[in-house]
Structures are given as structure tokens and as C-alpha cells.
Image 1 (cartoon, rainbow, N blue to C red):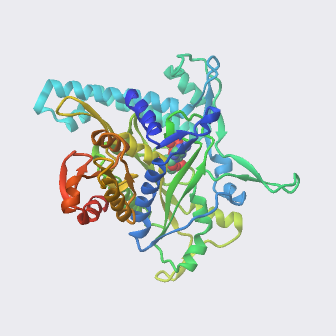
Image 2: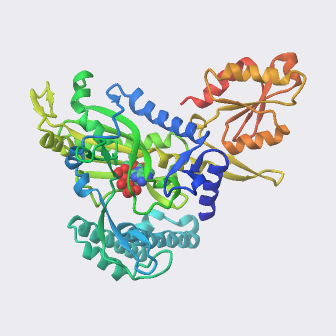
Image 3: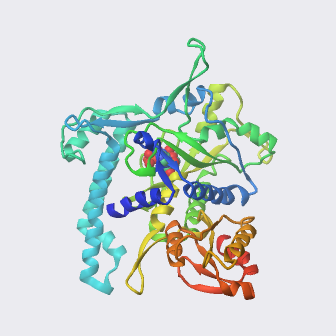
Length: 503
Ligand code: ATP
């Protein structure tokens, strides 16, 4: 697993997907830049999301709010007072950790034992093995589940009550050690606010303290009335937005999984109070379907229902994805009640209500939110796509099986040789196709090597121009995943690529 993750990081760099930020100055912790291919993959994921959320839903519209917002926004949203993570330092190693993550990782280790029990039993019982039954009745499995459950419950309730001494006590009772050094010499647990502060204005006394937004959602709430009135939106309706968010994460060591500057894709769906349960179920299902449509494998997703609810939520679930380092949150679906609009009403003194013509009355709508990290989605796609394959002749190839719809470059056009007029024909094909798709031209090295290069960068199609092309206007088209080649007419190419790329 670790090996694969290392490969993901080095492949992302080698093929122009992700670079460490400010690398010439030795980088900046948990900040990354996207390269020439990364920017395309990121854009394609964003577009794929936007299409599913905005384009395909008559009642969802988009906005692009500013990153800077009036500072009272973050009082009203609860971020000034409650956007904290519990921090703990190890006195010996001087390393800093999130106390809740240390505990969650401990529980994950207990739960990993369940998988081992299942594997053992599967071996013993063979075809007669009934997994559901085993999970529901095996005393050891039940013991692990109960122990994990109790630990998480205690942690959640201590955090809820702000009883940080008990969070520390729990870490000590469980004997949790510094994962890097094994030391158990912990400091007290403290709350640490994740927002980045900055100043607006030049002169010292008139300058205003601002925050870089830690989520895009508040720009949507602040514009609720603007969009509802100007768009004549009727409840239920949604507002979607993609954009940068900033969090001063305590620990950020997992490549682009947890960054200090990242991009979110969020949608706030405004509904009639009392209908939140059904919309919660609706959006859980709709969002899972969106993920599955990419074909990365059903087994890589699972729901995690929250026990520990944020200050604004009455129900919350994560869609977790099997990253190279295990199942982790990829997207959150939150039933936020009227917390946000209600609180902005109080702090701003402006009415943030909706007049419901059917009910003939005004109310503060409830909100259902879907929130996904674009960079995290990028990592999900990229880490699953990267595969090492053994071929029939016992050679290996590295292939990046990015779903065609998301691939940075859809096709590469390759003249078999650099003479006899073949480059000119290939350039003409590029010129025609690039109106509709990102296409590349490559004439360097033997064609076999060029195929491997395109496999490694994730290009779904290679189009090769050879001498026969001059006679009958046909080319070969090679498919990245199957490596099959077919002879087709040049004027069919657009339709063939479109068929694969469209969803
Ligand atoms: P976590 O528990 O991993 O810190 P969260 O529950 O705080 O995440 P939310 O506030 O619900 O996350 O944010 C919504 C989504 O934004 C997450 O599901 C994740 O995909 C993304 N996200 C949050 N924090 C980061 C980060 N530091 N780097 C990259 N993506 C992030």
C-alpha cells in the first residue's frame, strides 16, 4: 500500500500532474501546484461535477463568490468559535497531532482485525461461508466492533462537552503512542482554530481583520436572497459553487489528501423545513451514483454515518473512498437545518426567508449540503487509475486508466515516421480534432515507446498515421486499456472519440 502511494506521488510529478509548491525553495508544507496535465484533470473533474449538479438540474444554479467575506460571516457561521481541531503534542518528539485522528486511527486498527477474522473464516469454510452471518454472530468480531464503537462514542461526547482532559485521558488509557517514535509522553489537549487570518486595507488603524474562507458554503448562504429573487427560484432549489478554501491543518502529510489551500465543490439545497430526511436520503444516493458512474469500482466506496455531528448538522454522512492508505472521507452530505440562514439573519439583521406560495407564509429554509474536495477527488481518480500491468510477453507496462471523460488528453496523433509527408497529415488531423478535444502530437522515438508514454500519461487513444494513410485516408486507432488497434477512416475519428468521452 505504501509502495503504491509512493508511486502515485512520483508518477504525478514525473508526468506533469502535481508538483510540490515553491519547489525551487524546497517546497511549502501541504501546498501543491498542478502541472500541465494536472490542471486538465482537475478542470475535467470540476466540469463533470458541474454538469451533473448544475447543467442537469433545472433547479440548481451556480455562483462564484469572493474568497474574502465580511468578518462577521465567520462569527455567524460558528467558525470563529468552533472551527477547531483538538491538538496534542508529544513532549519527546515535539511532533504535533490531531488528538481525534490519533484515536480514530487506533480504532481503525482494531477494526482491521475484523477483516483478518473474515479472511481466516473464509479460508476455513470455503464456499459455505456466509459473511453477513459471520459478521453478525462471531463473538470476536462483535467484541472488536463494540470496543471500537465505545471508544468513538466516548471521544465524540468528550469533544462535544469540550472536555479536553478526558480526550487526553482516553489517549493515555488506550496507550496510544506517537506513531513515528513510539513515545507516550503527551501534553494536554488544546483547541486550535483552523482559519487563516489576514488584513484588508493599508493603514494600521483602519485595517480590518479578515479570514481566508475555510469553506465555500458561506458565500452561498450570503447570496441566498440575491439568487432566489433574481433567479425567481422556487423551493426546493440549489446553489452550487466551486472554489478555493484555506485551512491551517494541524497535520498535513498525505500529499493532496489534506492541504492547507484546496478547492471545494459544494452545493447547498434549500428545502421546506420538515422535508430534510427525504432530501438527505435523496442526495446521499444521487452523489454515490455520481461517483459510481466513473467506473472506478463499487467496492472502493462506502458510507460512514456520523456519530459526532458538527455544530450545524442534524444528520451527516461521508462517502468514503479506498485511498492507498485506507478508507477515508471523500465527500460529506450534511443536513444543516436552518442553522446557517437563521444565524446570518441574526447577525446581519436582514431577513433571509422564502415566501412559500403554497403554504402562503414565509420561513427560513432548511439546507441540505453536498461538499466534496476537488483535490481529494483528483487523488481518488489518480491513485486508482495508476496500474502496473504484466503483459503476455512478460514485459510490464505502466498505465494510467483515467476514465476517458476525465483524461487530460483524449488522443495523441503519431506519424509512424518523420518523413514522406506523414507528419503533415498527422498535424492536419490534430488541427481538425482540437476543435472538440484536447489532442497531442508526438513524433519522437519509435512508435512503441510513444504508445507507452501515452499509456503512462493516461491518453485513451493513439492515432497512428502510416504509409497506407496516403493511399486510402485510413489510420490505426489504438485503445489505451485493451491495447487493441483498429483501422478506421480519418473522418470517423471524431465520432469514435466522442462515443468514449461522452457520458
Ligand atoms: P476532514 O475530517 O478530513 O478534516 P472535514 O470533515 O473537515 O474533513 P468538510 O469540512 O466536510 O471536511 O469539507 C468537505 C470536503 O472538503 C471534504 O469531504 C474533503 O473532500 C474536502 N476537504 C476538507 N479539508 C480538506 C483539506 N485540508 N484538503 C483537501 N480537501 C479537504
